[in-house]
Length: 272
Image (cartoon, rainbow, N blue to C red; front, side, top):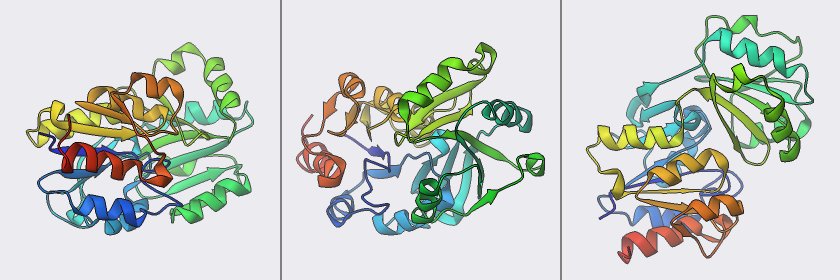
């Protein structure tokens, strides 16, 4: 019997940065099954989403943020686990970023800083209701005493981002967990941080066998949790190689009710 569902947000649960009514209604039918957002976003960026699914500021309800770098109990935003980057690690990535045609994005626990952003990324951050600042002076010394959660290179061109990853020095590749999301982000977390590792951590914390966990996603930062879960699900619009490693691929895409389909099929109808 499934006891917990982890769901990616962008291109999985959300439509236009909100939970559509069909997904909200399906989630609210869950009984004794926890529904946990598993996202690359910060916790402050998902509070409206938690309101929409009915778990905002609730005890014994949880969220996974920054690709697993932060695990929170929703009531009072209690931090259960945080794994961030050191300033020196972020500075290495920052200095390398000058060599590439990318926007640099740095997340602290509660804020996002953008260097060289294009207008589409600024519009995206506004739509996501992110607390963000555009930095015109190209340096990051002001972050020396901040908790840095995640570092990103941003460009809505996946081929270019993949070429950037291939070009990175080997010692850099060995220091970080590297993933992609939303077909525009090359993301860097501390080595060992992933949504899959967070799934295992939270399942252990709640004394849930991971075989009783469903994970739903669409992109490369979701692969680890899709593989770690008892039932790994890719939405219909996900990349073909992610579909290939999933236990189930939905019949509809995210904007037509992929999460609703999973809840109805595997929880409400009890299919295996």
